[in-house]
Structure formats: C-alpha cells, structure tokens
Image (tube, rainbow over all chains, first blue to last red; front, top):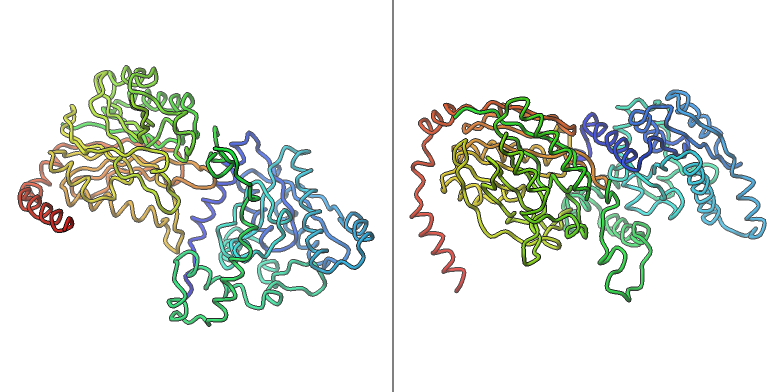
Length: 273
Length: 283
C-alpha cells in the first residue's frame, strides 16, 4: 500500500498560497519559468497561473536541436491551455558555439551546459520582466541529485521541491495538466530516446516508496529491509542521496571571522517581509 | 460571566514590529467595534516566527512604547498578545502578555522552547521558569505559548492553580500531508485542544497565525473549545480570519457539575508520587 497518496486539494491550496505570498513578499506579482514539455514544469505552470493569474506568468520554451519535437509541442499545449505568455528561445546556437571549442565533450557535459544555458535565460527574463524564477525540481530529483547544479536546480522559489514524483502525478491530475503529459515516460530530453527511469535504473514509484520511508519516516536499514526493500537498492539510493548532498547546500565558506554567513550569521530569507 | 472573545488570526511580517503593531491595533479596534471583551493574537504576533539572529533586534522591554500603547488599548478590550521580551539583564524570551484595564495583568515566558525538527528556539531564546494562573475580569485564566501546551504538566498546573480558561497563543507550522483533508499538525492540535479541555474541564481559546515564512506555512484554524471539548468556533485554514466566539459561563458550570474531575483531582497524591520519582531519578 502506497504511503504517498496525498490530499491533492489541500496540497494545491498550500502550494498556490506559497507562490502567491512568496512572490508578493518580494514586491512582485510575476513569475517566469522554463517549460520543458514535461510534467514537473507543467504542474508548476498550472500552480503559478492559479496563484498569480495567467497574465502574470511567463514561460520560456528552450529547445536544443536534438530535443524531442514532442517536448516543444507539449510545452506549447500547456501555455495555450493556461493562456500564459510564452516564447520559444532556441539554445542550439549558444551551446554549439561553446562546444566547438570542446568537440570531445560527453553527453553529461553537454546536458549540464544546456541546463545552465536555460538558467541564464530564465534569470535574464527575471530581470527583464520583474518576475521571480520558479523552480521545477521535485523532491525525488533533489534527493537523488538528478539535476544540474546551477542549472535546472537554480530558482528563486520552488513550489514542488517537497513533493515526490509520485505526488507530482497526483497533483497534476488534480490541477488539470493534459493527460498526454501525465502519462508519458519522464525524460530529461538531453539526448534522443533518454528516459529518466532507464538512466536511473529504477522506477520513480519504487524509489519514492523507499525515499519516503528512509527520509520522511526515518526507518533504518534493518527496518527498510524488513519492509521488503532489497538491500542493494537501499544502499544504492542512500549513496545517491549522500553523494549529491553538495548540490543541496550553499557553497562551503572557509570560516575565519566570528560571524560567518549561514553558520553564525543566520536570518530567514523572508527577513523584513 | 458570559463574554465574546475575538481570535485575530493574523499574518505577521517577519521582523517588522511597526507593521505588526499596526495589524494588532487594527484587530483590537475591530474587536472593540464587535463588542468583544477579549481579543487573542498568535505567538510572536508582533515579530513573526523564524527570527533567528533578528531576536535581539525585535525584542521589546515591558516599558517600551509599543507595550505602553497596547496597555492603553486594553482599557477598552482585554488583549492577549505574543512578542519577544528583553529583560533588564538582556535575556530574550518568547513571551505573551495579558493586558486589561490599562495594566499588565500577566506575563508568561514560554517554558518549552522546541528545538528539534524545523524548530530552533533554544538557540536564540531564554526559557521561562513558571506557570501561574491569574485573575481576569472573565474569571481565572492560564496563558500558554504553543509548545507549552504539548507538555501535559503545563495546562495541568494552570488548571490546578484554578484556571478555568486556558489561552493558547500559537505559531504552528503546517506539515505532514497525507490523504486526510487536514495536515498532520492540524489534526494533532485539534485533538490536543479538545482533549485538554475535557481532561481539565477548562475552556480552551486557541489562536494560531497564518502566512508563509521561507516556504513554511502556518495553518490558522484558531478555535474556541468548551470545557466539554466541543469546538464552537473555528477559524479558516491557511487564510487570515477574525473569529468571534460567544463564551457562556453556564457551559463551564454545567461541565464542572457533570464531570467534576478537577474537583476530585488529588494534589497530594500527585505531589507525593512526583517527589518519589524525583528522588528515584537522583539515585
């Protein structure tokens, strides 16, 4: 029995309120996000449109020349359904210009560069349109480190960073994300035919059940094995969480003074808001 | 006596005492207009919750202009409000005041400072040392701040000290999403307020804030609970609200006749056993 089933109406209310209030606190009323054609960014677009009104949500669709054409058409579908502003910004010329200098770069380097190229575009649009950048990384990706540091992991506000992929599916159905986007296989679309689950070596549903018990419920290894998880799977996932922890932290600062940022100089980000 | 209580379910701004005092004054004015006898505010209503290193910057002494202003307003309506108190020896307390007829009738300094999970209060704040009931024009009361209420001994001591009304000021972060239509923290608090009222034959007036701080929501749902554990008024979930509840003296009288547990509660057995436990722990 899955422990990941959530009350989607309540979850929607919390996340819509989060976007509305946290954007408003900065003195803004607009948000910008990258629409990939996948479910995570689609869900965030739906939540943002509900929170801020479609006219205040700007989507950047940023395909690379090898991106699956279906991704762009799904991104356009979301923007069209919601009536939010969008523009298509091809990143091929920027990324290719760079890799002309490094033609031997592998898929990982190319994928990371694309993710970071998109980030710079979103932050430029943030400044241009006085709009906060919304993150679209879910809790599963963040815990596994399945994302690019300072790329797709960069944002001002992330409404879905505390919900697992299995919960992203549930909430997407609740808010009305088109069925074709909910049912297709998740893919980072960094190269042809890539799917997340093939690359990770397990399904989101499997790993979400494990992560929920490991992280949220704090079951120890013995209890996880007793719950039916294979020891190898537990160890693999634990190592992924541990080894990617640097991606979830600010850069480490060498301490020399009495008050070091984030160690003994501590303020909430909403300081004065 | 019968009276009307107002529960001001506000959304304080983090670290902005002047703005929050404005919110409090507006709600006090509204309470006066609505002919409420008492208005409750959340824990840290004047400052916001996740203060961290801001604690010394937002702290007020009892003779500060802000507190003097609220004392003045209490000539027209009694006020229970949370703030950060700085003492003369520069300790900082998560504190609450009960103001009435222009006077500070009671100061409670939060005793149980949660420091686990998402909480870090003991890092920044000093711990209060006492639970004392006090007499108000609405009868004898006890004042608790959020986590205090989760320690059975705290409302118990106040009830044993004669309180028949328990005021609980709260900044409860919403967490624990499940299939239920309530967050885990909401469900837990609703059990706690009703059960405490029933155990102690006391009415419970619970005021919780709303809003978000760094992604953490505060869920609201302020309540007036009868001494029988029945919720007679409940604030909106996750939204600002201004709730009025009629408090009926007769409900207290009848409950104390039907369920005289507090009359029968045996202080000397409790003390004897607690002393034994203390002795045995020492060895």
